[in-house]
Image (cartoon, rainbow, N blue to C red):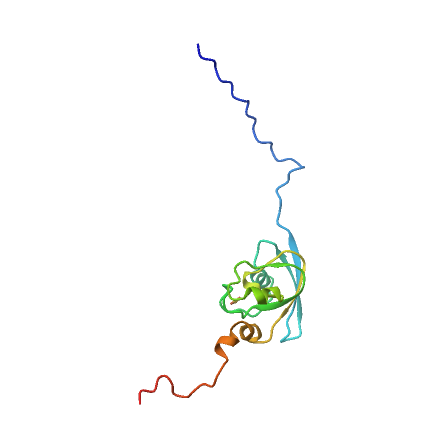
Length: 145
Ligand code: FES
């Protein structure tokens, strides 16, 4: 006669109680210094929301263009705090190490103090070595004569 296999008794998962509340996302305070206007804004940004988008919902309009981490229009320099930007394809790892970030695809990981950049500052740092060299010859290469 075969022996009957006894499986261990399964228990249901414990129900949430006061010790295991649903963890709401942390919210951080972001101070943005707009160098162009000299104004400073304070935002409250949940850790799982893009900083640029959260600012817009709070009535703060900051520079942007592509909203996809590619053009550098929304670039800032992080003066203090920790930022997370895994989708910032328009910013080299070197510029990220220097403290630059793209607010359209950045998440706060602490309270932050950031500063906007002058127009094209980060673009020049990122792409200037490729596009800003040499003289432009008028008419070329479209002239056919
Ligand atoms: S708006 Fe283009 S990189 Fe952020």
